[in-house]
Every structure is written in structure tokens, then in C-alpha cells.
Length: 256
Image (cartoon, rainbow, N blue to C red):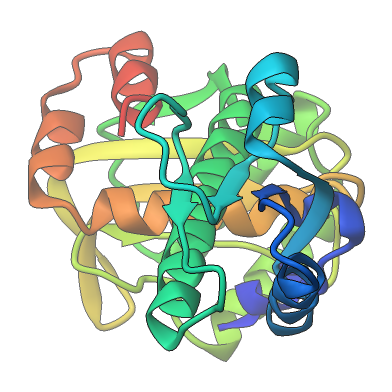
């Protein structure tokens, strides 16, 4: 569905994983090692420094990832990969796995920062039972418009999007959104119903109308991934169902 159009896929250098490489001077092995790492991971990481073990212990510089050809148990780092002086396929897989862990952590942190800003107590309704997705979108749209989050054009675009195909993508949640219109201020309007309602060919209990400003669009993919993972977790869905107020619901949403 068209929410994919919201996501920017291209990374810039500031988004890459920062890396420090510890390598002693085994003739030209160090430079070959660094060159091979840079060639294989140029789209994932940037090498911010190359240093000896003794210099690293003195300076203790910050980096997302530490790659070391010297296996010293005294070096502690949340993301450390010990490699051979001559890089192996196993080393490459280990580096890639660690990069993926770092990217997931960064994405989750960014999602929580933006998600916290998106949630507003004015945009929460419990147990509202209307006859169709169109009525829900119009109802939510009126409140978003009157509260200064969206325009009438935004609401009309969300209705047009819903006519193209249903935005219910699990048995728990529908996410009405626009095709091309940005929000005035990024938001998530949440309706939480104890009794499931019909939404297209599915029944849902949570309706999340999402509006994103153009400036926030670059971070929205992380929020979407976070929400999809959360609503795919039965334990978290149960906690969301049990939330008795907006503040409780917000606490659960930010705890995953």
C-alpha cells in the first residue's frame, strides 16, 4: 500500500555506522585490511579512525562499531568484532551482523523519539463505533483539522487512498493515511475499540490515522517498522487492549 511512498531509502553519510579499526602494523596488512572493509561495507559504515591497541586504550574514542585484529578481553564495547589480520568470509559475516544490530538500535531510538512527539491526548478516542471506514476517516479528520494538525485536503486525500484499497493490514489494526498530502504537524490519531469493527474485509480494534510533515518524512520508516513489529507481537497487543487511558496506552506504545 501507498505508505511505502513515504519512505526515503537512500542513506547519507551521516546515517552510516561509524567504525574504528584497531590493527597493529603488520607491514601492509593494516591498509589492505582497512581497504577491504571499506570496499565491502561502503554503503553501511564509515571508518572514522585506524589506530593501534595502545592508542585506543589511551584515547578511548567513541564509535558505533569497533573492529579489532587484536583480541584483548580488556577492550569493552557494545559492538565489538574480533577479526583475523587477513579478513575471512566469517569475519565479513560477523561485521555485517553487527552492523545490522546497530542499525536496528538506531532505528528504534529514532522511532521512539518521533513516536513520542506524534502522540497527543487530544487525538485519542476509546470505543467509538461508526458504520464504515469512511465515517471513521471523516470523524478523525475533522478533529485533526480543528486541532491544527491537518487540512481538509489531507482528509480528502486519506478518503481517496481508502477507496483504492483497505488500509487494514492485520486483524488488529488499520492505518488510514494519505497518498500525497503532508500534515501541518505530524500526528497519530488513535481509536481503540473493545469490540472489533469491520474495515474492508478485516475486523480491527485499533485505528491509527497517521499524518507526517515533509520534514519528518525521512524518519517515518523507523516509526512504521516499530509499529508493525509492535502490533505483530501478541503480548504487546494484549497490553494495548488492557490500557485503560491515553497515558497507559502511550506508555505501552513506547515500551516495546
